[in-house]
Image 1 (spheres, rainbow, N blue to C red):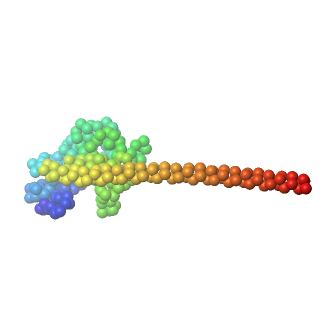
Image 2 (image 1 turned 180 degrees about the horizontal axis):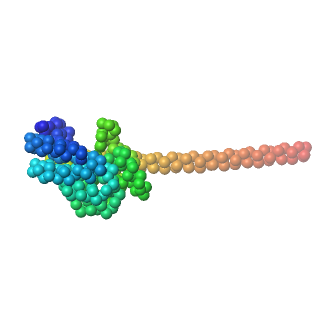
Image 3 (image 1 turned 180 degrees about the vertical axis):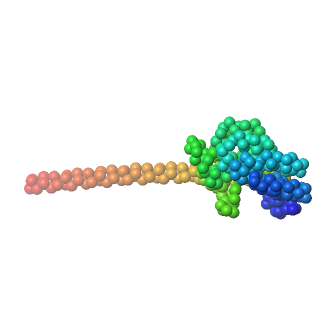
Length: 291
């Protein structure tokens, strides 16, 4: 399979393969070894998945295969979303040289294992905030949002879209939901960090990683410029609104003062008119009395 690059200002598209293998099908690794030999430039890694019981029974069977595949620079990741046995997870990661784990929520909920795997051994986490496993794990502790917790603990992680065709979800949908849930947390800077993390831990070669990170940073610079323009526009609009409110308040105050003045003058005229009428009446009565 050849590498394909798109034209124009779009990101370059490099087609590479990550093969999937169920824990109960270790014999499939023979085929993977053959593929790795024949398509050494196109196969990057293997994704292990399956039930926890199968993992416990069969993961040792993969050790010899992974030793052979290491000669072809094959890398490994595993999906362990519902696994309860944290020691099993540790053993598999170390035994098969796993670099990425998808949705290891029981690890995340255990601060000791989280620090051991992610901080000390540099294992990368991939999570999907729209998955059922994430929803269940996040509901176990209402004191924090799992993603917020990972950020506060400075844990390197990236966001992935699992089963996009089945659940009709993609990264745009996920990012939009995250932004709507917590606008202050998922800024342009945070989005850039998530994307760079995903590239850094990807199974691509270093040259491609550097190219993609440079493209991301270039695009986010435009994002920051737009944000600055939006902020300036918002500040100008806010200032204009404040000035307009001040003008309206001043005009309203002037109108009130003018109305009070007119009312006062009207009262004075009435008083004067009343006095004049009284005076004329008195004069007429006095004249009538004299006559």
